[in-house]
Image (tube, rainbow, N blue to C red; front, side, top):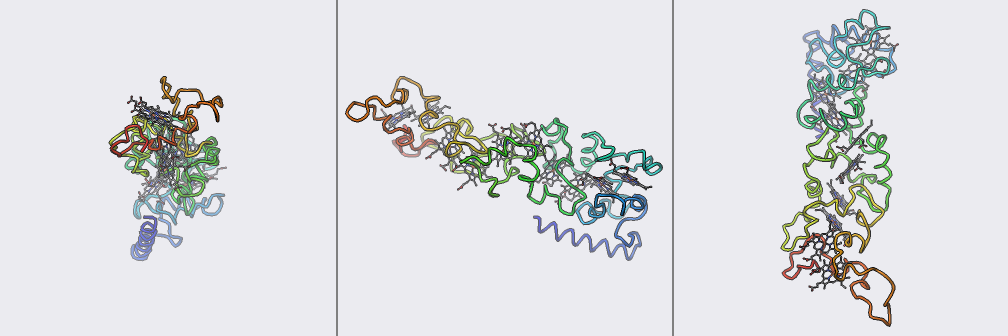
Length: 303
Ligand code: HEC
Ligand code: HEC
Ligand code: HEC
Ligand code: HEC
Ligand code: HEC
Ligand code: HEC
Ligand code: HEC
Ligand code: HEC
Ligand code: HEC
Ligand code: HEC
């Protein structure tokens, strides 16, 4: 996809150059004339930001040769043109006169209100006063967010708790670069909890761990209900991302007056008559098919 976009941009660039030669609508520096040129009178060299870099991105000349570009995102900015040192452009992303978060996002939403961005309004990030430019850097030749570098360089700056979880002994291989935040989350909002791409948490897990979907002859009800009853999503001190260890995990729910609820102690060890179910220590030594079994006699999830 990225490759395709690159080729696409290259073609677009080529076409525009030709159009420039023929129509004379494009100035020598590759920018559209008129309003854009007015902005560039001052912003070409004086600004700290590499204003030109935007012309190497997909946002170059958005309106296809018309009176556009700078003003598509920053507004026509008549007042700023008249008194640039003390009035703001219509939409500014700061640092001097930052517009409100929703006004900034609105300038992008005029074009990006569909597909992945459709749920932005009302999303957790929108409500926390983030705006599109909290993650996207449009005056940079390669926006880090769409370069696949979001996990480490963008998300974790704010999500310190998750950053810590990624270093725990058992973890999804995010820091290792094999899974990314955006494989599971849509930072622009989602229909279910935690802005997942899928509506339910289980459907998220199934998208990669298909074998856990079943159907099983013998189901273990909590598995079909919610994987997070036993697993943490990012990292855990327990093996296999588990929420608790060994017998304790199972005994949270299996506390009936039966072998599993017998307290786990040292009494009755060699010489005595210990409970073999606890000598086996971990329930999983016998009940190995925690996620469900397709064995005809797997009702107790032992095979
Ligand atoms: C596609 C939308 C878009 C277009 C087109 C655009 N900008 Fe921006 N501009 C932004 C965003 C977003 C920021 C915030 C910083 C960033 O994301 O890189 C910004 C920041 C700026 C800043 C302030 C940077 C700073 O940090 O001090 C200036 C000045 C600026 N733009 C000028 C221009 C000029 C001049 C043009 C036309 C060549 C232009 N912009 C075209 C979106 C746009
Ligand atoms: C006559 C010169 C001049 C023109 C023309 C001009 N600007 Fe500016 N602009 C400035 C100056 C000076 C500043 C910086 C003010 C400061 O930070 O002290 C600025 C700042 C900005 C900023 C950053 C605002 C912020 O909050 O930091 C943006 C964005 C911007 N201009 C966009 C534009 C756009 C879009 C146009 C064309 C419609 C334009 N400018 C035309 C001189 C100009
Ligand atoms: C005038 C319409 C328009 C506006 C306004 C606009 N964009 Fe875009 N944007 C496009 C088009 C067209 C593309 C290329 C096709 C696509 O990927 O959807 C694009 C692509 C993108 C991409 C993907 C870039 C890539 O490398 O794949 C991002 C991210 C993006 N825009 C963010 C923004 C943000 C943030 C703003 C507001 C500051 C904004 N856009 C304003 C039209 C616009
Ligand atoms: C919390 C960070 C964050 C915010 C806020 C954010 N984005 Fe994104 N955006 C991303 C990341 C990360 C990607 C890359 C997605 C991927 O790799 O799957 C992306 C991808 C995109 C794309 C590329 C095409 C696509 O749909 O995948 C567009 C367009 C886009 N964002 C527009 C916007 C707009 C418009 C806003 C504001 C309404 C916005 N983004 C707010 C992080 C963010
Ligand atoms: C500028 C800071 C900032 C950045 C950058 C940021 N977030 Fe957030 N995010 C927040 C805040 C604030 C909240 C709400 C409080 C919380 O849950 O921590 C939040 C909430 C979330 C939630 C919970 C949503 C819910 O509905 O409960 C998820 C998931 C999330 N962010 C993922 C991401 C991902 C993925 C990225 C990177 C693409 C990212 N965030 C980048 C600030 C940020
Ligand atoms: C394998 C899928 C997956 C990946 C990868 C992933 N998450 Fe999550 N994340 C989840 C799930 C599932 C939840 C919801 C947990 C729950 O509700 O019990 C969640 C919850 C969250 C929350 C809400 C608060 C919390 O901790 O419960 C934030 C914030 C968050 N994730 C950020 C991130 C960030 C940042 C990254 C990348 C560093 C990331 N996630 C990577 C699946 C994932
Ligand atoms: C985007 C794909 C993806 C999604 C979605 C996903 N996982 Fe994973 N998961 C992986 C990868 C990759 C590994 C590492 C596999 C390996 O190392 O062989 C993994 C490993 C695991 C492990 C074993 C960890 C260990 O320490 O060995 C568990 C448990 C797990 N995932 C549970 C879940 C749960 C629960 C969900 C839903 C919240 C989920 N996964 C969603 C990709 C995913
Ligand atoms: C009742 C608790 C429980 C529930 C609910 C649960 N798991 Fe597990 N899961 C475990 C245990 C215990 C292990 C460790 C098994 C082992 O080490 O042999 C495990 C291991 C895993 C592993 C890594 C080893 C393997 O079998 O590939 C993955 C992946 C996994 N679970 C995914 C899921 C998914 C996806 C869901 C939801 C559909 C889920 N789990 C629900 C208890 C549970
Ligand atoms: C969140 C609660 C929960 C957790 C945690 C849990 N279970 Fe279960 N388990 C259930 C429920 C509910 C049933 C169905 C009971 C029924 O049908 O009477 C069940 C059934 C079983 C059965 C089949 C027994 C029968 O009567 O059919 C076995 C064996 C079992 N669980 C073992 C385990 C093991 C081993 C663990 C730990 C890895 C575990 N369970 C963790 C809720 C849980
Ligand atoms: C040494 C092997 C072993 C260990 C260890 C073990 N079990 Fe069992 N468990 C069994 C066997 C065999 C059955 C089937 C008994 C039957 O069908 O009458 C069983 C049955 C069950 C049942 C179904 C009870 C019923 O009403 O039929 C549950 C629930 C259960 N075990 C949970 C656990 C939990 C929780 C642990 C860990 C604390 C555990 N078991 C440890 C062998 C074991």
